[in-house]
Image 1 (cartoon, rainbow, N blue to C red):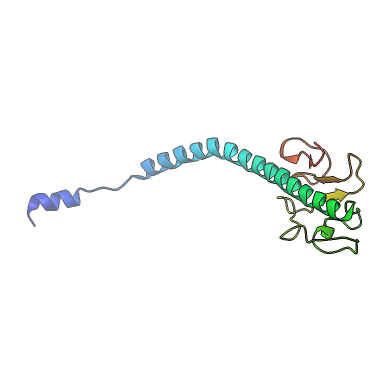
Image 2 (spheres, rainbow, N blue to C red; image 1 turned 180 degrees about the vertical axis):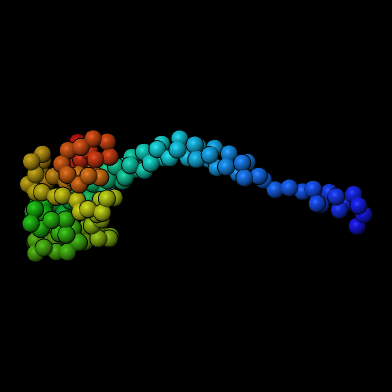
Length: 143
C-alpha cells in the first residue's frame, strides 16, 4: 500500500456528536408533526370497523327473524345467533364465528325490543360510556 492510499484511509471520519444530535432533533420534529395525524386515522378506523360489525350483526339478526318470526330477546342476546335458545324454527348458527367485541374490547349492547326500532345494537365508543364526541361517540344501528 502506498502513502496516498494510507492517507486516504486514515483521513476517513465519522459523524460528529453535533451532527448526530441535529439529525435526531429533526427526526423528533418530524415525528411530532406526523404522529397526531396518524393516530387520528386509527380512531376513525376503529369507528369504521364498529359500523361494519354492527351492519353484519344486523344482517344476522334479520336472518334470525326471517327463520323464527322474531328477533332474539334482550335476555337471549346476540348469543342466540350462535346457539339455539330453544326457539321454534331456529336454523342457525347465523354467524361463522363468535360474536366479536367492539374494537375497544367491550361487548356490543343489544336490546330487543329496542327504543329506536325492533332492536337496538350499539357501542359506546372508546370511552365506554354514553354520549361523547369524536372517537368517544356512540355508534349504533338506528342512525
